[in-house]
Amino acid sequence: MVDVRSMTQVSSRTPIPEGQGAVFSILAPRNAPCDLVFPGIVWPNNFGPLDLPHSVADTWGQRYRVLRQTRESILKFIAQVRRSLTPWQLEEIESPLITLYTIRDRHMRQKRVSRAMFFRVMHPTFNPLVTNAEAVFLRGACYSLYKFHYNTMATAIDNLLRSPHLDTYVCQKMLASGWLDREGCDDEAFRFLERYEDLAQGDQFAEEGEEIY
Image (cartoon, rainbow, N blue to C red):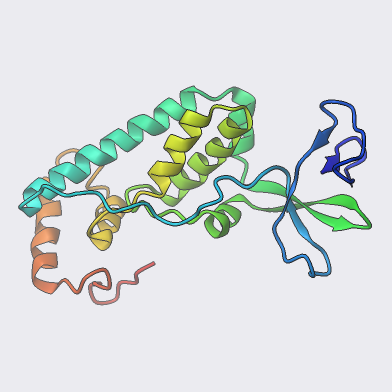
């Protein structure tokens, strides 16, 4: 519990006027010299991937069409999330930095860190059809919506980010190459799929000189 008037850690039994106290979350080990604190409750408290989706595609052509449709629905969902946020929420979410705190003598001291790195460590994204930038935006939106009790939308965002897909490398390659977003690139995508069929080594597949992240 933190008294936000003085940004001081207090006992949960300390009388604080309504609206002047907040629950913060300690991130670093409690025996660390200087605890790292998140201003709020870390949500959700389960961080692993959801189950793989059931695939009904029998051919790479069908699989490609399913991936394009899935990607299209993701972009529409992101647009819906953006429309649901206020300008000040968007400004905060799109900031490259996020505010954490450290504790010194029960006082909170601000520490600005990379938003992308923080979310990457705290909430890994398992959906290979979401770009890194989109994942950072969505995770920030998730926290903002949850803070104001829009739990249904926040849960939908979390489920999207934690939803894996089969053929992870194929998904990442197609997304990075723009084949799931651009029109008129079917031939290029199918040539890649033909090569992949011949050379695939599971998710560790990579063409010569190419790195997997």
